[in-house]
Image (cartoon, rainbow, N blue to C red; front, side, top):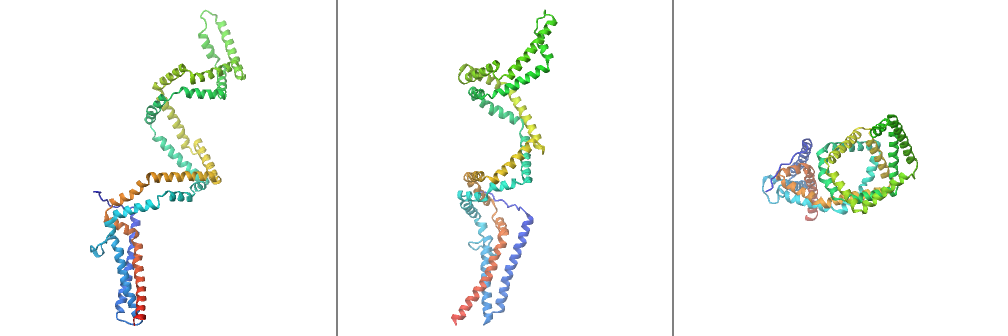
Length: 422
């Protein structure tokens, strides 16, 4: 059997206010019933105008008592008597839950209704208007930065290590790298994208040679014959250094230098070998496996991640950091586009509608089932008390209206009797 649970009061203060309102309305309804009874007794057996008053008071009592019975029967047995079809909520709360579940599913969780509500909500336009206010944009960026910073703190080194070892490395082993490298290198050479990198490399090499002649002399001197005179070695090293600088300058300034052309030819041939030569592909794959087997791959990846994380966190924490400023600029630009580009808003609203419909189709049944399961676990008597506390005040108007309407109907019936019965 499903165990019943007590309902938790979410707000004692609010419940106390509801309880006072319910008592006031009950007092008013009972007072009208007592007033009708007093008037009825005081005018009993009277004719003329007082006869009309007596008939109205009698009908008011009947209406008040009937409606009191109807309202009370919802929550408990009137006067404690086990009359059939009373105390409906405690007895039939499970049926009530299933009915409420069906009602919500049939009237709220339908695709047409959801799309209409999402469309009428103009979500993207509202978001654009809200983000267009600088304070709101700043707040959104601050919240996003805080969440991102907390998320980065939650990622531990063992998480990254496990991701690389268990997910990325096996995937890299299975995926042939030669076609990828060959295609990338072929496109790079075709579009001359590598020339900028070559220029940068020669520029840095030239600067290093100019700034470190002693290191060059030391490297060349260690390879000079031991029997050669020192002055001769120094002259040769100096000449080699000057010629090396002149050669690098020639390569740097001449786009058609033979060395550049030879490098282009070598890279083009390497690209073709990576794409079509089995021996080159086999050596490349073997090199890939040796790299992946090296323990330093995981350690270096974790270190790279930590460096990236520290940089991101420092920029996220700083209100004037580069990441925050960039996010703020992008948010402001996005808000401006939302305000002026109707096709963009329509596209985003369509995505929101599709997402809502998908969520309802996928999880709607589970959501509505929560209603039934929750009500089934409620204690029947306490559920009745809680529901009465929330809606009982308004239900007292039924008693009040029954008293008033009953009196008017009684007067009309008495008038009809006097007119046509005499």
